[in-house]
Length: 403
View 1 (cartoon, rainbow, N blue to C red):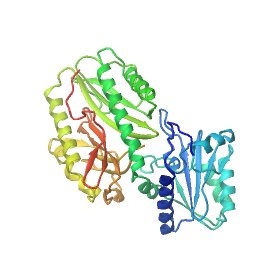
View 2: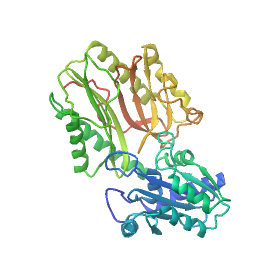
View 3: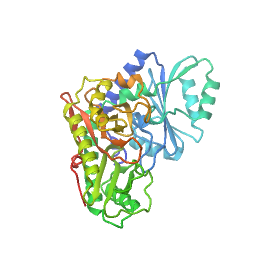
View 4: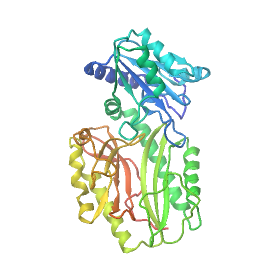
């Protein structure tokens, strides 16, 4: 039995078998002999940043990790610190743990054991290929291609993520717990907000509440501006000691999680009655968000989301992705934009993506002034059921709130 813990809460043996079975069938269909699933730490906060490897291993090593996942033999977990092997065996369903600072050497040795000199090997990057387009370190790539000159290596990150993104019942239990904790954190931050409090102090409140309840906090965007002089429509990734003052607009992006599963709230609130312009902008964002939650259904495609952003175009605003995958990091599909070049034109695979039950998504209604001087957002995390979208966050994100 795997050791209980709140960093990587153990799933049932049936859940791991389900994951492995689904992936193995997909590998056979794709003609893959083995996967090299890499993990590294790309974000801030106390999360691992290694979601693709962690999905199979339920463990993340310091710095970076590999899971070697062959079609015909058991997987192996490769971590950089050999002294952590016992901890990994306590937590991970993978019991063959191989350690060493030079991970590329232990991975290469495993590939040789598997006889993959001419194998078709899929490489999976650490997080989300569309959002963070990277796979493995340069030094590792040199070693693998030198040791296996006749093998075929290919990036299959998006393919893998499309499988991982459909959540099981056991995963949804953790996501719902994360949603409840996120609601609490945002409510605590809202009630703690007062003139003179720094943006960094508000972030610290969120961290304290999350950690107190055994949660994770991977990062946070937060800023405030005078409603009379907002000069940038996007809050700071690293909140500063600038302070909230009377008649400010406050924007926060808050991913809070449990067991490395997250939900995200995109909150906007005010210290003082909003001006007519901001009230109108907020009500527009709230109405678009509500309509998406009410009308988006499984079976629709990414391209069908475009109709929901028409109110932004009609009001003279641009907007970035209205829908993106979300549970650990932004992931496919990124769809629903008024400007196809901001932040990046969606891939055709995202436009063709068919929404399925079990897909967890971020719904973010985000009108931005054409001069890029003003903006606000309304956003929460939802999951597709067989009937439609279920909003996971209970925080009243569509309610215009004033301190």
